[in-house]
Image 1 (tube, rainbow, N blue to C red):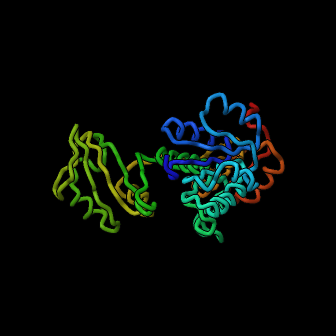
Image 2: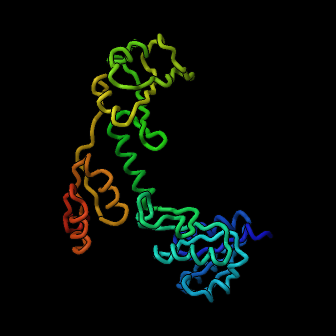
Image 3: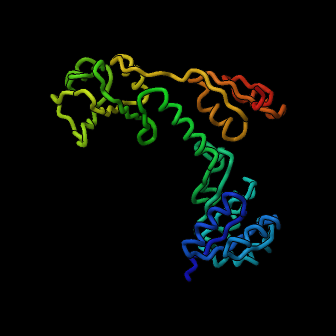
Length: 288
């Protein structure tokens, strides 16, 4: 077995356990360092891997794991600082690829410290991924179907044409002439089982699904001018101000009126200070 296939996982909680199981199933040799003996005992019952009870911040644990023989390190402990510092340790042991799980978004663009500074090859933010997906679903629910393209500067609108649609029997040429102040394009038309790349004189028919691309800042005004109906979500309640809940509020608070209920007083005070456009309520969200 080559060095590249040897994997060291720090932390055998939910994320670490899932990754270890997948890698073992694929036939990769896995070594785990975990400080919680109960988690290790539970893992030993279902995981065919080398399990070491130790601290990821102690070099003795790394030496016991033969870190110098590893090709991949995955830091998935519950502590962000441990995970980030582990990448530097892994680099000193000669581990080529380092993947770090963090809950904080502080290492995103604009951070004083970059992933490169910490020798991190890939940062995984499970909570951020969940928050972004919720944000995307809320945006999609607010209109026909809006999908971001590339870095988010463009949007694609997918809409079904009914009998009273303002686009019915219009052509891309006519739409461009009528709404020339916006730079947009009818990218495709799904008609029955066929997908058409429309010519300028292609008429839009009933039951067509039309795909229009425009700049993000132009999409909503364009929809208004074309009289394309979009129902905005104006109010939202979030139960819990944890990492996901607070991030969703941060992403949406400029567009949606949000009430966030948090049962921890200190956390509620912190959120009230950070989220300027969100109403933070200290209370139990399970109360009727």
